[in-house]
Length: 426
Image (cartoon, rainbow, N blue to C red; front, side, top):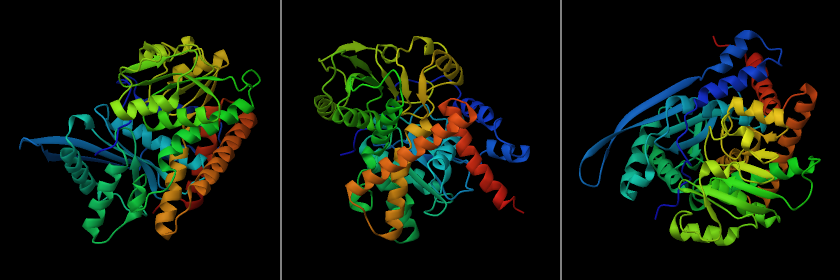
């Protein structure tokens, strides 16, 4: 049986790549790096587009389009997820690959950024069709992926089973088992303990670090709203509830539920595991995803997809702290509005770095064939998240900028210095 997917909340209309470039341009103005190096970092290193057929269960053939973008490989092999969504396009993949470069650099990982995707709704395919699509897409990517060049991982619309199919396809092609070709795969074939929980847990670690430093939000009676209840959102909710926080609202692709007295997250996760989504859950008020973003709370965690907080709703957000579980959920115009209102935004490349941090742990374990227990995974993850938060905070104070710009400054500087040390070939 194929596991549940982390699907998008709604189709986005913003150009994610324009947002990524605007964020880059804003940050790079604070750095004394040569114009040529800055221009080099604005462009992906390579872009790969594939068109391939899949045989449907009724015997018909259907064509699908997939992408893989390597933004930068200066610090090491590129790393980034694979998403299955009808919203996938080249500009989205470019943006996500760029954000992965900065995310890995900010966390101190020896990776560059990559991203991939297929234009498909995985829920519209049977398990056999989904496996066929995945294996054919993986086969098309073999010229550009390897354990030492580019390591895919799950993302929106994909899951550990899909990573297992990708690993098997690559392994069968080269003639021997290669666990390190992907991360986020099942534990019984070389996956890491704690990987499924990593991104959501990291989001809550970032949130608690921000709360420690907040003058107005320093009590345990914190009310949280989480947009998106896939892998990231549900695990963030579970971790927050474990720590004693109150989750008053959550949502999935079909809409949201809100209860100002708090939701029973354990019961809610059990309900979703049984029914497949939040529809029909009776312990709260039904609301739309757009309404959920503007309901009363102290902390808002957008954990769905990019372009959710915009200039149209940023002034209506009631949270005093936003912790970005998704990639690029806040547009540049919304950032300006939120900053002007004094809302603290913990940016995506910091807040959701837990996934790639534990993916790094998984890759290292696979290469060494030596595996860690879950306590060690979470101990190292929490240390890495706190260290990354502190580095971002220090940069924000040094340059007198907001947290997003600080995170980008720190990451871009690290990559730029590596570019200048290595030089340009030939």
